[in-house]
Structure formats: structure tokens, C-alpha cells
Image (cartoon, rainbow, N blue to C red; front, side, top):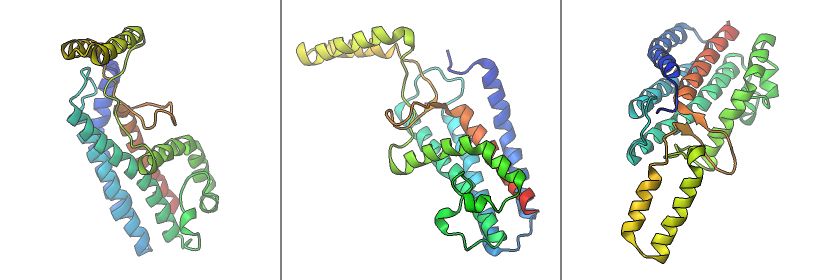
Length: 250
């Protein structure tokens, strides 16, 4: 049985089919924009849009590697390849947000703001104060999303890299799983019985189910995200931010 329900999977596939045309529309819209600053144009076209293309490709790769209706635990190399794409995805989602901030800085001649104060998060008060009231209100609504993003980006860059747990133990199986763990230790270190160790390990693996979740440290966060859901959602958010920035510049 898959982690997601059939109606959720259907909506995901519809969203996935829509990402390519949405990306193409945004690409065309940005390329039609005439920037007064060469640096702003570079951050928009070679920063934001290039990263957005990477996001699109990462989503395609992850969905191809692990289907949203997958119920079996994927092979280790498949999990590894999916993790690589998810890590690239999170790094570039964060980069998209920063690129849009730099577009605003250069297009509005705000280069006196120091580099470490350029951004669109709540702490970037100096830059936010130069935006319209509507855009500031929009960013305030996005503050929880921006904080989630920075948590995962910082974990990836500085602490524990993002990964997909290979299998989860349903609540109903926890007691049996723990009991088998004790038997496995006994078989390996007390009985020195390799055959019994293998038999018990196979029995224990049957209790695991695959959950398409992404996390980082087991001690620093309790949040686990269903990556099939989160990745398209994040793509749509940075797409929306792009259109909002174009409106702001106009």
C-alpha cells in the first residue's frame, strides 16, 4: 500500500504535467522584460531562471526514480540518486529566492545595502522596507515557508545532509520490530549464528514500509516532508515569487 492516497497521487500527476508549460511561460515572460541594469538581468536570466530549470529537472528525475505510488523500499542506489536530486533541489530553491532579491537590489540601485543583508526573509528588514506594502504583506505570509526553507538549506550546507529514510516502522509493528532487534543481536553476538541472523533480519525487513519522506538530523528536527508533494509545491511558490517580483518592478 502506497504512502499517498489514490486521489493525492492523481493530483500530483496533474501538477507534474503542468510544471513544464508553467516553466516555459515564466521563461518567456522574464525574457520579454527589459531590465535597466545589466546585473539585474544576469541575476534574473542566468540566476533565477537557470535555477528554475534545475528545479524542474530535479522534480522530473525524482518522480522517475521513485513513483508516488511506490510501496516497496527502493534499491539503495535509487534512494541515493533521488537524494542527490532532492539536495540539488533545495539548494536551488533557496538560490531562486536570493536571486530575486538581487534582481530588486540592482534594478532599483540599492547597492548600498551590504551583501549579508540582501534577501527576502523577515530578518532582511532594510531590503523589505523598500518594497511596496502589498509585496511586504505577501512576504510576511511566506515567512513560515521561508523559515522551513532556510532550515533545510542550512542543514544541507552546514550540518546533516537531506536524506530519504530507507524504511519506516508502522506503529502496529513497533513491538515486533524491537523484539526482532533483540533476537538479531543475540543471534549475532551470543549464538554467533549467521544463518539465524540472516533469517531474523529478513523477517524484520518485512515489517518495514516505504515512506517517501525527506528529513535531515534526527535530533534537530521532527519535521518529515513527503517529497513528492513538497517539491512541486516549492516550485509553484518560487514561480509565484517570480511573477510577484516582475509586478513589483513594473
